Image 1: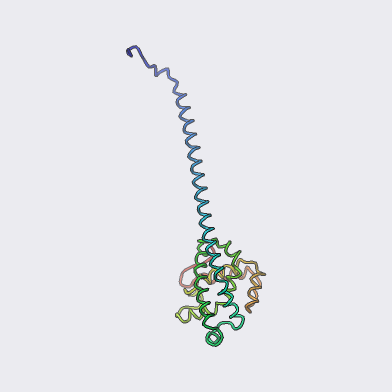
Image 2: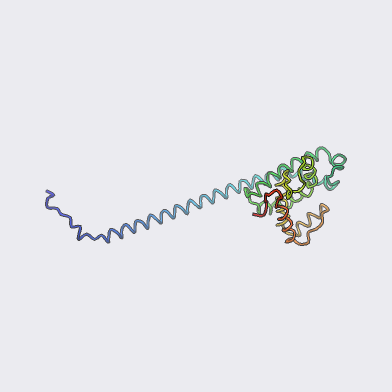
Length: 217
């Protein structure tokens, strides 16, 4: 029945087959590119959602710290912390508030510095309050480092509350100069004349003599 059927491959139009295969490859490539674009979009959305969740957590932490921050700033206004005032002027409640605030801001500073939360978004919202806490607690932190037999400064290898200080330096360098000077005036600190010179000093401070580096990223 099929004996008389013959295929004439020499007369077959292979160019048409090649054209169809090329068209299919183009379609498959377009589908693949659409899939890659959608996947990239989904990853970006997931990343933004994660960042927003962590930022909301950090903001909630700062909200819960407000009463404690008020305690330490009021204590500083009454008498800046030093060895003498620690026993004579700073009450137990104020010293406990200093401990809690510094621990939580150390944690937030670590996350912000390593971009686990948006460094700039957090600074824009909470930077001034973060600076207030550092200005009020810097003597307390230095005393704590002294008690632990650590260097006083992070450039010399100090470890205790170092991310608290590092992120405070970042906020101090990148917030508007007028705002920073207003906060410094409130705490009896000298004003900064040139923000560029101040940034250079802060960069230098973040280069540890021990070999580590906490420079701007």
